[in-house]
Length: 130
Image 1 (cartoon, rainbow, N blue to C red):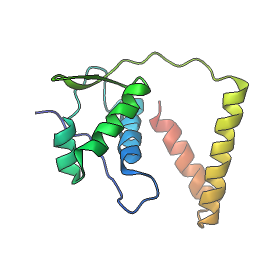
Image 2: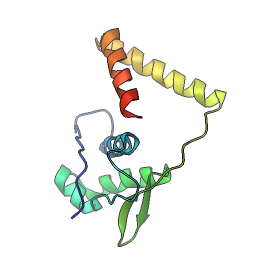
Image 3: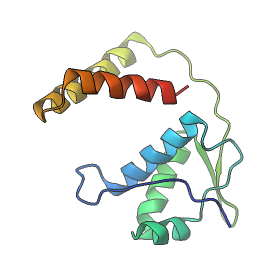
Image 4: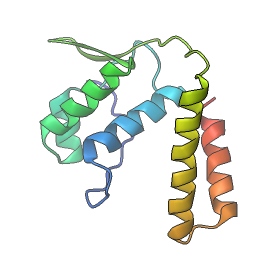
């Protein structure tokens, strides 16, 4: 049996469930909790354990495969790939992602999160990302 990665989904979140799954698995890959060569649970097994439709998990796996995190093979399942370290982003990509980060910070501040809380969470996320 395949190990079950720790994934928590929130059904009433504005983030689609497939995206929550992909984000959680990507985080496990970046942190090293899921190593290259590791086999993920089958789509149906993970869907059953999360209480969701298997197509939702299949979509998350497809997203990660497109990003280069997973190899998907019929009858062999999903395997974590050894990704090459990405090249430094160009200035346009940096500006785009900087804008996304600023938008997220503004959204969190509008929801009442303090600057100190945001700072701690960003630093903790950077530490986990190696």
